[in-house]
Each structure stands twice: as structure tokens, then as C-alpha cells.
Image (cartoon, rainbow, N blue to C red; front, side, top):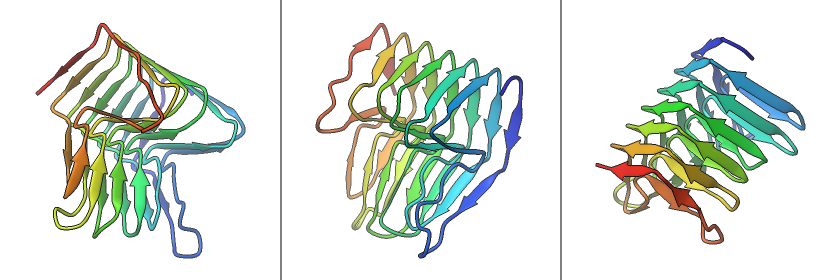
Length: 193
């Protein structure tokens, strides 16, 4: 995709098909290239939604260059949900992108992860993450990675993280949360507020 606007797409799950995802793009076993694109207001809702704007599964790769992700969302009515803008655990790259105001919210005692993105095996370079959040019930839920939930294989270089939040009874990583088996090389980056 080149120079595209993808706005207000919606993926809806149900108890029969709980894993909804990719309000704008859902892919499996393919290569996705996004360049100079604007993805805004896309969402995934249901019992276990993933990737408000983009959800990939299987052997899919993503290359995102100079694109913005604004106010994409995952709204959980069940156990868990992740990746307000992107959910990808595959070999990917995100270069010179902006993630602004993306979020994951859970109703009740579920788990919210990766306000902007839940990523694995991904190089993130020269990107900005601001105002992203994860929220779960302050009485029973958990929230991890206000901006980024990083699974193994994620590297972060020359990025800025500002004003991201993780709010719940159990929460961690307002900017970045590293999964228990992940070690994240973080170089030449700024994390503040």
C-alpha cells in the first residue's frame, strides 16, 4: 500500500469466532508493505481481539515506512486483547512511523497489552510513540505496555516514547513492557513523561 488512507474499519468477534483483528488489514502468510499511509480510527472488538488497524497471523511479514497510526483501538469484552494499532509476532520492520493515541481497553478482569503495538521479531527505527494506553479494571484487570508490548526479537533504535500509560490493578511498562522471555536492545532512544 502506498500513500493510502485507511479510516474507521472495524473487525468484530463473537463467542463463536473470538479472535477478531485487523480493522483495516488482516493478513495470513503474506507480505505487507505500507508506505506513507495514514491509518486512523480502526478497531477490533470482541472476546479476544487483536490489532485494531493491522493483525497478522502465520508467516506474514510487515514493512511499515513513514506511516501514521492514530486512535486505533482494541476493545475487549472477554479475556484478553492486544495491539491497539498493530499485532504482529512475525519478521517485521517499522521505520519512521508515528503512533498517536492508540489504545487497548478491557471490560472486567481481563488483560490488555500493547496500546500501540504488540510485536515480536521486529526492528523499530526512528519512530514516535505518544499518548498510547492500555487500561483494565482497577479492581481486577491487568495492563502491560502502554505503547509497546515486546515479545522476543524486538529491537528499538532512535525512537521517542512520551505520555504513554498502563492503568490497571496489575500494570507495568507505561512505555515498553518486555515479555518474560524477551531481551530488548534499546539504543539512542528517549523515554519520558
